View 1: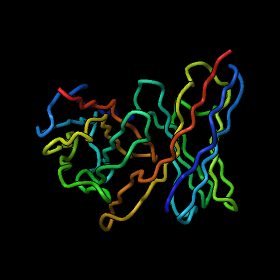
View 2: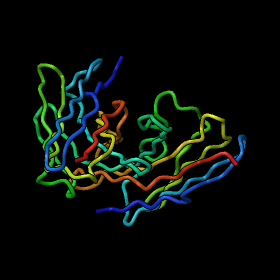
View 3: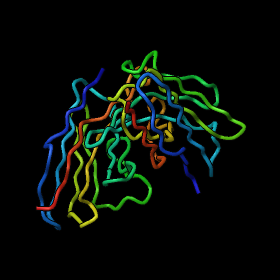
Length: 109
Length: 126
């Protein structure tokens, strides 16, 4: 089973700052099967990025994804107040099994 | 609009079973996988398994093999997740999510969960 490790666990930033979130896989992952989700308290996760770098419908362009192989990054270019949340990466692998990273919390500094 | 509506909160005793429903609307139910994901309070997301509503084929995370069953009723566009032999550690919010699988290129596909239900709280307590 592929393990996804997200870092840092918590990111303390101010609105307007740039956020860089990392997702590292224990073995190589197909970029097409790497997605990112945002979750706010009391809400279901929301798809942000699929295929490592494609924004989902309605997602602002301040969100971008990159990476390949074992290292993937979610970047929020300028944090808006509504962006403070928990972010998860997810991969879809062999045998149609999915795994999630442990999450990165982006909090207001 | 496209949505998944889940059944209401459940309280169960240890050893019992729970069955959560997920009703789809606004799209062709049989054209997309349904995945189930759970989240204990203050914890991360945990994938439980998938079901293809067209064929009924399923795949479960190893952790839940033998305890989880995913089924569907296509006539009412509803998916179900049943978890048996409940224990306190199964207390969590359970989400269903629609999974889209589309071609990225000739031999590559995208697979992602783009529509989520609001979640069903399952509490296991004696």
